[in-house]
Image 1 (cartoon, helix red, strand yellow):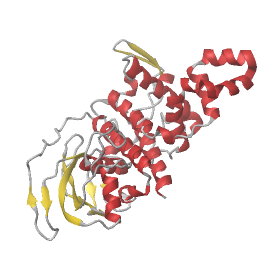
Image 2 (image 1 turned 90 degrees about the horizontal axis):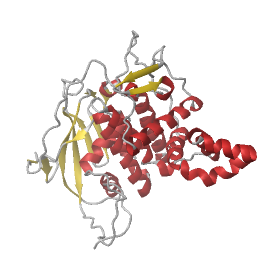
Image 3 (image 1 turned 90 degrees about the vertical axis):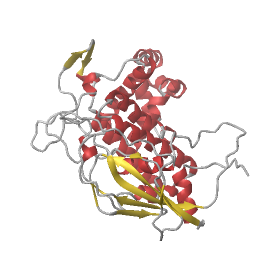
Image 4 (image 1 turned 135 degrees about the horizontal axis):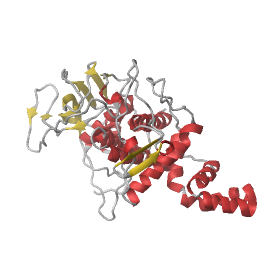
Length: 375
């Protein structure tokens, strides 16, 4: 019978059913493509076995099947009610895409799922290869000398600890799991295209945080600061009429003017991550909420211009960061006082950071939120 009970993502419900002792009916395998190098055998995580395929050749933009996922098939079918539109668990992908997204977010690497290519009636049998709905392999694409996100192609260890996110995914509530999976899928798409379409990747990285915006906890004080940053003339007029007390009183009423950026910035500030492990001596961002908070507001302003009036993200923020140091750590922000290119002019204060720094902030703040919920 169709059900109206709220449901979580496929991978979430699979994990719950497995833990609840549902009957297993064989299983299936599918590959995951990427361009990073993996060590370690893998991990058994509930019904999911993550296996290192041992793909030795690796270079940025060269996508090959580097991970194989073997999944137990669990009995029972879910039939949703068709009485109303419901997109609470819709993210544009299947269970295979969800596993790839969770691995991508867990490890910070480019991952894209292939289709199921083998099914098992029992795991003691060799299984049966299938190919009736296989999609083409992802096309390899050349990458320049400098990378937008250098960390995405660093070596990664496949281990239960590194992939604990998947094993504890079912500790979230259904609503949390749906929002989290949408954030993971959006992050996955952003990282997949960042080397070739950085302006679009900026938008997707921002959207991955917005997917969890309902769980932001920005304070009233943050709303006041944002009102001053986004609508300085209005804030000044209110302050002139009634001082700081009137601004504090009216800020909650004026919050719709800054509500979306408050959720975005509030989420990151509430789950503010530690700085990257490798940092340059020069062109380094002072790592504090007080410094990075206003930078996040500028990033969100660029996002709004890109979506609402067609102005792409600034070119200085879309260029690969260069490293001039022996450590190889890339610059964290553009260094020219001002730049002009393709008809645009940008002051350095309006181009606060390179995209690899923002990727770190986005991924680590999402993982920090997940950790606080899963524990």
